[in-house]
Amino acid sequence: MIELPETYVLSEQITHTLVGKTIREATAAAKPHGFAWYTGDPALYNGKLAGRTVTASNPGTGYTCGGNTEIVCEDMLLVLSTPIKYHAPGEKPPKTHQLLLAFTDGSHMSCTVQMWGAMFCFPAGENGLPESFAARKCPAPYEDAFDEAYFESLLSGLKPTLSAKAFLATEQRIPGFGNGVLQDVLWNARVHPKRKLETLSDAHMEALFNSVKTTLKEMRGGGGRDTERDLFGKAGGYRTILSSKTLAHPCPACGGGIIREAFLGGNIYFCPSCQQK
Ligand SMILES: [Zn+2]
Image (cartoon, rainbow, N blue to C red; front, side):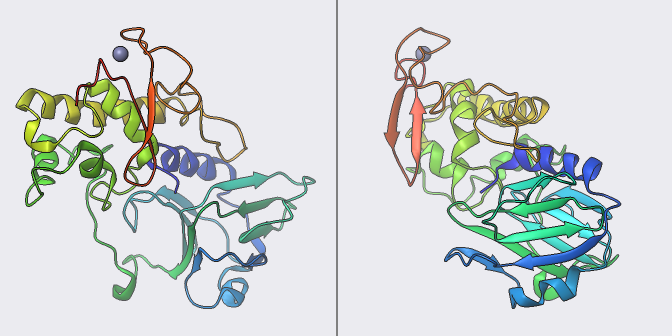
């Protein structure tokens, strides 16, 4: 899954690089993948896309909801949850791909599924998506509507024994907020990933809210995280505090060791002294 900051970076890069290009040919599912999802028969993608021009791109907030990159091709909308790569004219596209767009100027765009990935193609007009494809819309942390009151409303009805990780990064409570961005958000708030919601004070909750807003902003501002790659295959400029890249480094606050553990389907990283359980 591409997480929130990177979908914003990708959609900005697509807006600058692909808008105005006309699709010569679209190839979907050239290399079958058990966890690649399409809308209907992938063999029909060429008929839906060829001849259309890329007119816009949004992070997954224009028509859908967080954690996707949206590419508008006139009256068709691509909603992509996979990494997306651009190949300039003359550059060879990769041999393995689950979606390839060839443009009339000789450039390409490819999607390659990692663990799983959606490459949906919908008809979309001025009125948005047809009802059968409509998604639950909710504010993204980059929007003003994602305020403290909204953040607290996400807690309603949750079990008080739920962990901070489960609250923030599961069930798509905040679409596009995944295990990757979680680590620095929790470290900046000094909250342990396993910390139970019932033990968090008001001050903790405020720190968590502020960290969700500011940490995601820094990640986007840096051009994405240094563990991820952008449209041009370049690593992002945001230096992760806690990730596989920094595991061997001391905690930047206390100088102690960072710990990695498997928890809720993914590795968590934390500083046992700065982030108390
Ligand atoms: Zn520390």
